[in-house]
Image (spheres, helix red, strand yellow):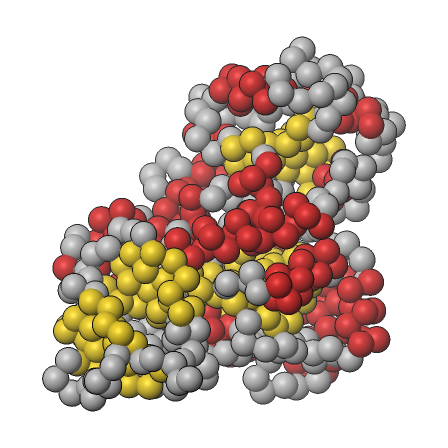
Length: 532
């Protein structure tokens, strides 16, 4: 039996191409694809079509989140103490104490999502904050940016972290300046000392986390995601979900080369290249780190941090190691996605990509720099020349780009203007893909409409972009970043029928209100997968 056609009519269409919106739009869907797009007057409507009336509200391509820790977001939503709305360390302690009341002795407690830049204390939690309430249960807490860990003495003891423990390469154990004892704050690779001994996520937890993440994603009109830093369990979880028919969001999976060369060894042995898979599940780029985050003061800058002149950040691997890994991945036919936030970290990422391209030229590599937050003019021009895709998170601007926010605390007033220069990048015809960094960040910034609001209302006026441009960065450009712009990312004939209908017409409301708009309907592959 043939599929019944669907007509999505009477909407204000922002189609992802960057063109002005279309009033009174009509979209005909047959099976999994769009077959006709136009206005109500010029579209040939099939007689037996199922009608979906958008009632003047915005219709858009399904959002594509180009930077997620998707399974982790779902797992943390289900199992981890949410610290995203805490206003002080005392609130964190109270939340931890409440959860401890329901845990047996010795069970690990995890929490995530705090933002110390908004606390009165303006410091990281230490073991002294938790030892008196949790002498037997190891406590492991991480901030929204995920590049730092606060733990209690029990966790330090189990990880065998003492005064004599040497900082691992690319990491730092914060210590008491007088005694030299660890204070319970671990940065970057030092976190692995605890990660390696705490209980791992089980297969069941991973699959439930993926299901939960898909629910969250569809509720925000997001139909495709890029999963960063995928481990072996993550890849198996996606495969299981696909086999069981419960993978309702398209996934572009990026294996990580953060800690070892084993992932690259496996890729080489199997002969897998970027884009292996199908329209629902593909292998993407190799994720590689070079620096950390501004929140943990581990993103690497040319100049010192404004609020801590003793540091310029931490390289998680040496520039020489980065160059070797990028070259190897490039030669294996893989796209690379380099985590780089500070201007010095970005410089080394660009150097590594350029060196690989000089040794083995490739026209359409689409290598990426993830985050790419603090850019100089010269770096923007290099990105254009090298045809690199910046994968950026506008929700960060919305949270920390305002006057007195975390960006200004870390950078100072003069460097602040270099943060997330969307206008300049788009003016140079650079393809910028937007994402949320969900999983490391609390669940709330996953909302693509929050990111669009932040990009359109960038606190630095000369960095602001238009509504249509921001939607394109969250749709077409995300598809381009995964080599899929020919099949999705815009509402055009022959594209996959991934469509969302919003609760309002974005073009008719003040831009300040965009973040308050919700999603009414999400369609994936021509099927309604979520309704409000």
